[in-house]
Length: 136
DNA sequence: CGTTTGACTACGC
DNA sequence: CGCGTAGCCAAAC
Image (cartoon, rainbow, N blue to C red; front, side):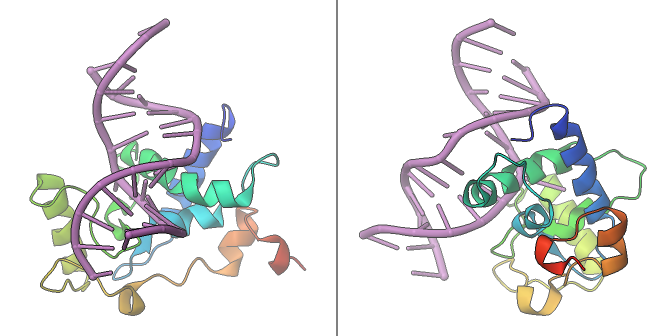
């Protein structure tokens, strides 16, 4: 899946979605992955297991200067995925705290409180990302 | 080119 | 809960 030229589209779709995450909210790699329809020949279960890694790959290649809030994406456990103590982890946490996102004593965000609900329907329609169930 | 690495996640202990 | 692991691919060396 996501074989070229689809990979490029996948990356750009990730960035588009991440750009929709409002300040003060966080999303997860898996949540973003679940918004992107798999290739026609891809089993959804497999997709769900593998795609989050590719979301991370896409995010690692995030273009600078395009106002993409990369720091609002954390993992499904509510923690920052960069190694603890790394400069990148510190930077991500700093940016999130500036927006009001709180971390507990173990460095975890309460996803119940801060998780993004997802893009609005206008965005989904514009990007042609509406899931089959939501069509019509 | 072959190898290693990776901003993940679900699942089993 | 926490830790280890499978999954199995594209970048980055």
